[in-house]
Image (tube, helix red, strand yellow):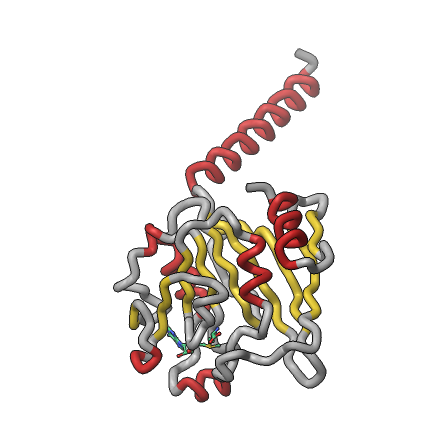
Length: 219
Ligand SMILES: C[S@@+](CC[C@H](N)C(=O)[O-])C[C@H]1O[C@@H](n2cnc3c(N)ncnc32)[C@H](O)[C@@H]1O
């Protein structure tokens, strides 16, 4: 599905203005101002603000199997899916560490929504240690090609450029006295395809270099 169609569906299903744009480099940018209803339905610390899941769901009508990573008390009526959290008291589908995801059959999901603790202070609230974001992204390399990862955070996680393409960057504003957050949307890419593209680029530049040499030697 093209991003233009995702944005069209977002506007149709949510009724919000089309405040996402496809840039000339094909990257999607935009800002969401979440309005007055910023409360977290579950009241869980760091829970998704009202409306967040509805917006994301409207962007991905084509997805069949969603995984909520760092799931906390995610509202599953708003966005059904399997859940992963390190805290067994929350009764997730999988009790697992997001940095390994050993118990999670990642190959069956085409969409992951990730909402990690943003800081050591946040992690303290959950009585966990702060996660290494790049290690989580490495574990997510087991997702099938084409799967999307929607990562809500105050930091852009480190990731391998041959494993993920950063397709969208959306700023999220809540009400006064709340932190700004960023939504980064990655797509799991096919390393073979990206290697082929790189190889084709190299072949083109080698050919140009040969033509320059031939022109310089007068042949
Ligand atoms: C920001 S909260 C997520 C809140 C969720 N979006 C919601 O709407 O309720 C972060 C969650 O990450 C979990 N967590 C922390 N470290 C983790 C780890 N290493 N692996 C999996 N979950 C972890 C915490 O238990 C907490 O529930």
